[in-house]
Length: 277
Ligand code: AMP
Image (cartoon, rainbow, N blue to C red; front, top):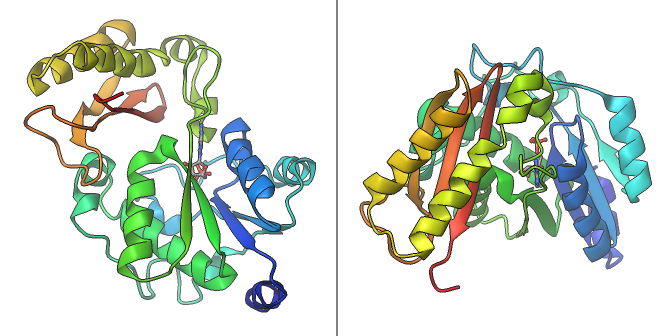
């Protein structure tokens, strides 16, 4: 892949990377379409990265459907699908080699609930960047904190890659599309869009002038608990849109974000509120 990418770049062709864990859906397709439209060559990587899963998380049961993924990539005009094996990526055993340690940005939100998760993400993405040498790489705003972690990785370790952000693709009822949505049973699936509705409701209050972080956070939590039976909220609140730490007051751009267990699925979603809009 490294040689292939160097050769293409030498010929003046732009190589772009869309990193994924497979089980591709319309959200991934948004990134792929944008990359295919903006670059000469698009590589989609498919790798369920063991190093970013905690010991009790869903690494084993994470959906894998390579044949379907391949046909989606073909349909979208992807040039190369890169699917390395775990032992190729981690010859010394997953988690035993050199790792990237993400800074403070990884200590809030999902980072607080999933220790080591973003170090695992940054490690695999750094490896993919070095293997595939892309000029651009595409990431979804759905995983907002991941996107900020990657932007920092790119700057802090001087990869010099153009990081492209793509909007969140949603189901018609507002639920952010995710590979983990297939874990949702019927009733959970019906109620899951209330996570996004809580973010929209909170955003509306802020735009109308609400300045209290406590009131916004309580509104989100109460709304989610009221509409989603038996859910468990990992976090729901107001964060700095770049540093990702919880804010004390609402001024300028803020990030509204939530992570909620709905049945077997841990769902995340976010919106950025720009008060100047
Ligand atoms: P994953 O396969 O879940 O690791 O996701 C691979 C990439 O697709 C990441 O950059 C995600 O942020 C992005 N992605 C996943 N779901 C969506 C979505 N619903 N809308 C936009 N991007 C998404």
